[in-house]
Image (cartoon, rainbow over all chains, first blue to last red; front, side):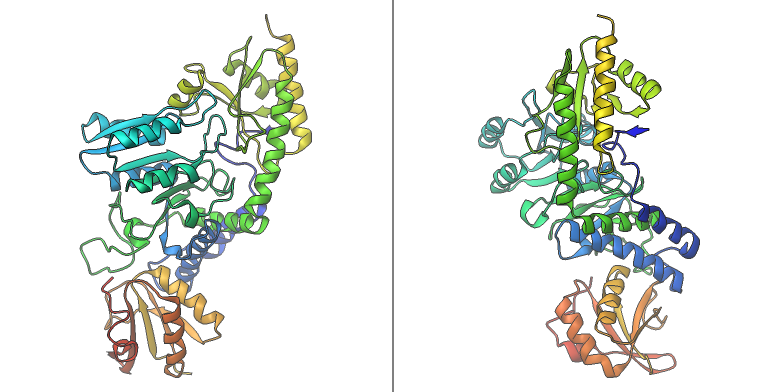
Length: 384
Length: 97
């Protein structure tokens, strides 16, 4: 079996993740931050370790600014709905996932915001000239930007974009769903106001884990309010971090896994993971590029790139290719629009979508060769 | 050793941070329920010996915990005295969280 759907959920996970979750389930089991017995303290330590490891990965000093949610979609919703003010003019890009586009389109439809979408080139690069032009023309309050595309693997030039937005006093939310754990991220340098991440993709954590990183002084409204284990006498939500945003019993077993996953990444280093995944991606890109009738999308694997490749074949639909790969070659890929219709419109693959190959750190060179061979055979034997 | 001095934070996150910090400094501490006389919180606080008070305050100040940090001394079975203000002075750690 060759699993190439790591951009949806990474698999397999490093063994330490499962061991940490089993340890929590069999030896701890309690609620963190609620009671005061030893097991509650142990659970509290696990959640604390997850925060500390995440702070280390993103290079921030105060880990109370790491807030956990169940995934990046929840984090993005909290960030967007927690910051937006009626009448705001909001910027986003044509490469966004539905987790960004749908909340923004909803707010636009409700008449609460004006939305401006920065177009991108057919290879997925945002049009910076258009952005600069719009910044001169209008006054914006909020920008919600992808850090890396889940369709083409593009890494967005945020180091170039964010300073332009900051000069205009615009609050910046980043969707780091595909980049967290995949490329080095230094949030002190990046200067985003809210950076959103998910645990189950390149961070190697279990599903049901994710969160966001708040810059100092940024305080969106919480999405939910309720019990935090702190200030129990108060009938109003405590406004200190991280409790302000984390009402209700957390996904402690998931966070135990995420803590172990982050530890694995910090020990291995993101640089090493990125280097290895670049090798695999380049190999795939080059191999697929020799197949007649196959079209690759995105900036090309000689660019700095996430481990994501989208392609189509002249003769077969993406669904047929994926079915064939699954049933006859034991290769798992993802097809269709990848929850990013706007991105597919940008690269010209809407509504059919593409086949997406997303290798991960644990794939081998040999597996990449097998995949290229299988797709090559399919292209050669397909009807005309 | 009598662990009869209590370090309180508004969030469990800082209790965990302080636990790590103080244990690394080899100060003997225990995590205990917050005494009801001090607070109605359902959480934990750090108990330590008053002989380590200076060290604890110095480490806590250097770490710079945001929000409210409170220290209590147990005077009698149900009697606690808040003491951090006399030690920290008025300009630090007096936030209300």
